[in-house]
Length: 289
DNA sequence: AAGCGACCCAACCGCACACAT
DNA sequence: AATGTGTGCGGTTGGGTCGCT
Image (cartoon, rainbow, N blue to C red; front, top):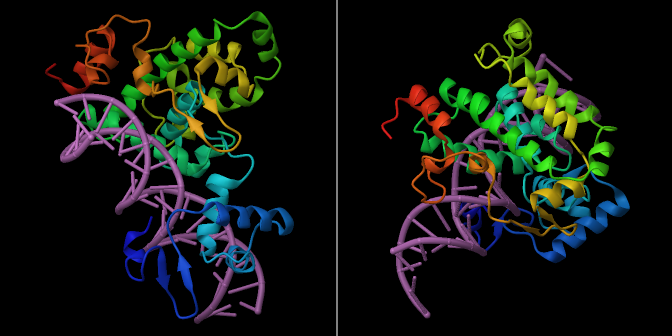
């Protein structure tokens, strides 16, 4: 919401020479107008579209509303474990190229991924008292959180029945294409490959067997949407509402299946780490925990 | 019940680029 | 070549919601 603009000309309106443009949250009527117009005339030429559809909005606003909220293929709701892993991986390759990252998460918008990164990932960087772009934090993601995420995915997939598992083997190509290029991060043999293709790919982990994690994921990956939702308690509504089960996954989920050094106060840093992780972070950040 | 703070996310802005005139 | 228009992108903001005290 643009409070600055709104305050200049009454609630939700801003004066121009020719007309009053509405800002702020969209109403159901506006949504309906936009959907109706696009369903008949198609999208594009957003400025003239806004005018033709009878919307007192900027073309930009209409475009954003359509892309981030109204278009039929937009997915809303919890970011799945697989999506979170992908986001971490792709961000390690491309940085804040949100739209590029979003291309690999069908139905997800760059805005949603950006918000996820800022609210979840950057929060943990803040807890670690390090910059989200620092080598230390990237190493933590790459060698600690991402493998833990994969463990979580594996744990979830092993609980499914054999029917869904066999079905998954028929359509692993897309996720494989997305994940495999990044496996070079985890092997000492492919240093040159990683360095040549990625600007951030020059760091090499002493962990050389983490590829197994990914192979496990790929073997069990099931791109079926309902499958993910059923197994991760993600409730996604076709009409755009969504339910958050509150676990927030994120890095917090890595805690499962491990012994904890935490003090039991919810989402605090201690609860995110087991003993092994703890020593890793001590080394990385010289924590006094 | 009320107050407060943290978190989430929809929507905005400025800028850059592509294309048309 | 210069200018205008449309589009896309990344960064930022602030209202709503939720949980805690």
